[in-house]
Structure formats: structure tokens, C-alpha cells
Amino acid sequence: MTVRRNRRQYEQLTDFDRGRIIGLREAGWSNRRIGRHLGRSDMVVARCWQQWITEGRVYRRGGSGRPRNTNDREDRAIRRVATSAPTTSLASIQRHLPPSRHPVPSRETIRRRRTEVGLRSRRPLRRLPLTPHHRQCRLDFADLGQLGV
Image (cartoon, rainbow, N blue to C red; front, top):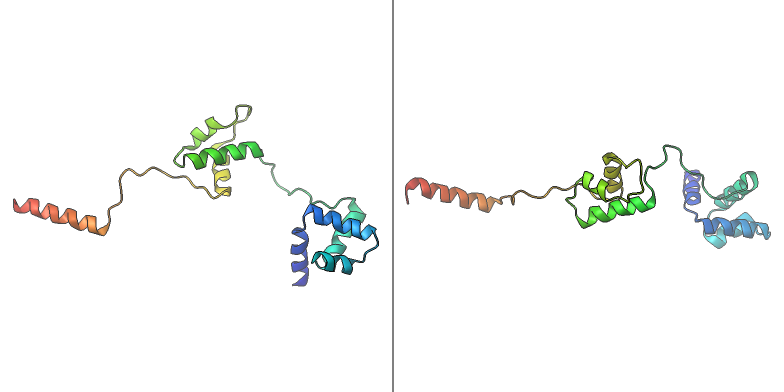
């Protein structure tokens, strides 16, 4: 339980905090003192220091898996087009991307980028949905038409 909590704390360290840990450790501070000073566990400090000693770095490695097909600029362009016109099609968003891209991101990639920021595809309404009151009014009107009134 505590190992999992400490690991979570370690993952939440900013690069600045990691640099502070290394600097304070090199200044002769103990792990416990640094942990109390920064509001972290001494195991978090020890793990960061151990990474510095063994690997010579304190930043996190990139994740495994396939690299992203779009860069930050294209992600912002997708987000901008999708928020300005929510009913825009994926093909239309593809055309609005910066023209410097040779392999144009696929529609699936664009759909994923929109989903990452919480935007879903929307279709324009063809008609307003009827409320129960509207339905009853339409039935009453139709009944009057059958009576010949």
C-alpha cells in the first residue's frame, strides 16, 4: 500500500522538484530532511537520488508504444476547428490542418484527438424533437380534422 502511494508521489514530482532534490542531496541534506522540506516521502527522495546515481538523469523516460502522428501545433488546429464549428466533418478538419504535412493525419487520428479533449462529433438537428405536450397537440389537431370541423 505505501509503496504504491510513494510511487504515485514520485510520478507527480515536477522536473523542478527533482532538480531541487538532487541539489539538496548534493548539499548534504538527508533524504528524510529533504522529504519533510518538500512535503514528500523520504522514499520518493531516495528513489529520485538513486535514479540520478545510476542513470545520470532524473526526468522520466518516454512511454512505450507508437509515437504520435500529430504534433502540438496540429493538435491545437484540430481543437480550434472542432470547437469553432462543432458540426464540422472529419474530412473538413483534415483540409484545415497546416499544409506542411505530407502524410495527412487520418480521420481516426483526428477523431482520437477530439476525444482526448472531450469533444465528440455532433450532427446538426434536422428537426426539433417533440415534447409530450407537442405530441398531444398534434393528436388533438388530427382528431379535429377527422371530425370535419
